[in-house]
Image (cartoon, rainbow, N blue to C red; front, top):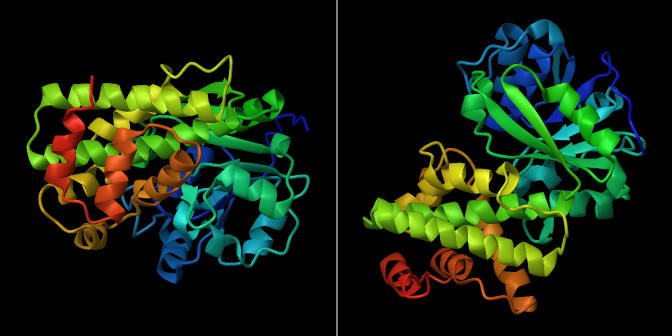
Length: 336
């Protein structure tokens, strides 16, 4: 299905975390009206009264005249032609559970960099299967884009992926402005899996930092992560036009592994410093998608007999109680 850009069309945003808030901020800066599904009463009241989200990015002000926060999912979706999914993957099924309004004929955009736990599917795979959506009606927004920076207007580059090039550019037209630049791709599942993998690898890097490894080693580790990611994508999703050195793949991997804003790196850092996995997860104020992704990637890699030593190490620490120090030491012998 092709879409023309319609300046007056409404967007729905599902979720009220930091990335959802940054997306709403960007859409409203661009003059878009946003129907916003918010399940938290405190956040809902604050958005209506002040235009601020008190839980996530509270310093970001949003034009109240351009948002319609609501806890009625069906009303939000019914009023919109584009639906942006921006809830953590671990909670997406719960967020969508009340939905009875059909999604057919709407553009559905995943801004979720994660896997659906238990289903072991990307968000696009899950939405197409669960809601009988054609792949051409889906788009993915990805790339190196910490919500904290997008929310305050720091220059960021997003990639919009869709099998429908017109649909991708329509989504890009909603988001692009002076501080958001958009690139385009048709590698929908490839960029999804790259975003899932980079979260797993950021946990590995965080572990290394917490264990006291230096910058020289981190550079080698991240280079090997990029190599492992490229090998995984080549085996699972062959694509002649994919370039994993671009921002949707390598750029997102680098920012997630190096930035102190990365929640997945922070999770790994806590574990490397001696926290148990349970304690580290409890200390996190936001979801670390890599925790769930490690389980999915391990299952897929095992089924397809892929050699993934870095992702396997992360899984063993997170799910099999393997000691982080010994596991990292063994990994060092496999890096090049």
